[in-house]
Length: 109
Image 1: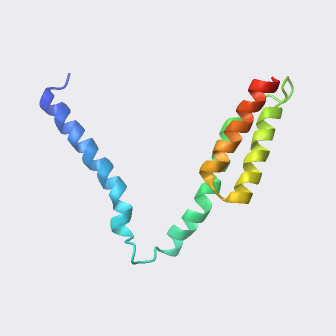
Image 2: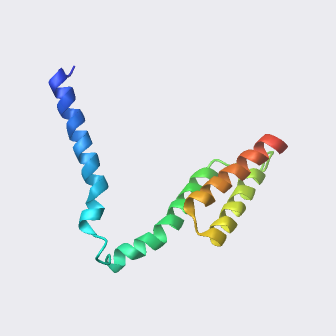
């Protein structure tokens, strides 16, 4: 069991590390300097990579041989794809896919 002082030190260290992680990008890449090309590249490809990872994770347990045959999941993925191509907004895309999936599950199945 930790003593009170150990708990306070742990909380202080966690707070300090969290703040450092949050502020470090602003220290490394100030607003008046352009970030390196690799960082710009990551900013371009990571949103789609994150969505792809979520899609694979969401579809990994889908059984296409029994009802509802993956229809809600496929409809949600299609909606997510088209909204992301249209608006290029990761949060909106994920929210739309989630809404479409939940709507189909609640209304039709």
